[in-house]
Image (cartoon, rainbow, N blue to C red):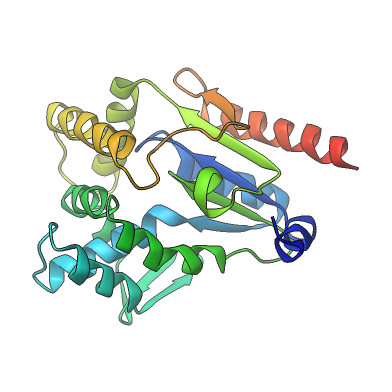
Length: 231
């Protein structure tokens, strides 16, 4: 680690929350960030934005160079809960399963991951950052003082995602979601570039039988112990 990254780590702490799709990491990350008064990074949104841009340009999910170029030139803006692509609000569009599946496929491309790496690291701003994704603790912020890896039973995750989609007015079929989720898990854990896996020093937290509030509190407790131990 260089002195610059060491100074950055000390000045701007990061909590990384990684895990498989629908493990609840996005909701949890936002609540942890709110409790601490920190910034939040939904890294999955960047991959979904890349996927949406690629789909709208008619690109194939197998065309790594073209999708990587789309990632490099993304015209995106985050404004609180609102996400804009080329000036229009797309927060609803990027949550479609079609977009999520496309994102999972192109996330395996090293060129796409590299294109988005510095964009993700730029979210590291004072007083701190909570970053959720699949490789936040292993690749993007390896020097984070606290790393959490959320796990949950795949059936529980599929039920959560089905409920989320229906609440948003999006039609959903549990069996289809379960099949897609198992396929996505296999892609995420089996890819050569930044596979989904807990960092060696991560706290693995099973949220299958925890409420969101209990999961958030567990992470805040981890942070309290980490912060007090570093003083």
